Image 1 (cartoon, helix red, strand yellow):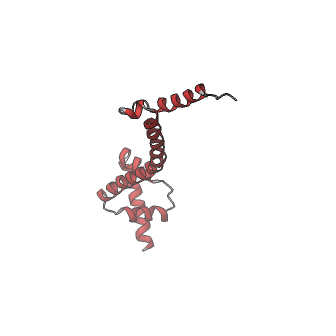
Image 2: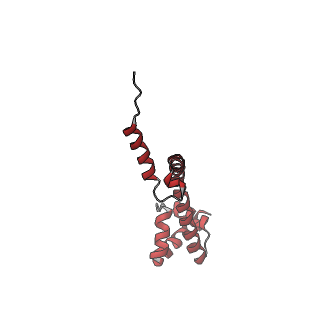
Image 3: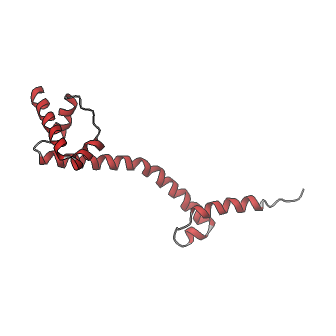
Length: 121
């Protein structure tokens, strides 16, 4: 039986990898083996960092809310505890947006939290 080269399929597979590796530096975008390794590694980084991004943004929102709370004389943990006691259901992203965009509304939230923390104590 004659040997089959599989040329078109191989070329298509290699072109697909090299297309994904466009913009990479030096041999990582030119040579198939190096490009394949780079594309696989970049996929691993992308998978990992899609999860880390959620972690990073939550930390950023907490830092923003903490700074806004400190300006108003309450700690972040007491503020969050007070909101929970007051049955205010706002996530950290929205709290940070309110702290930046509408300081008057954030002042009201702080007062509400302070009232509930002192009432519970």
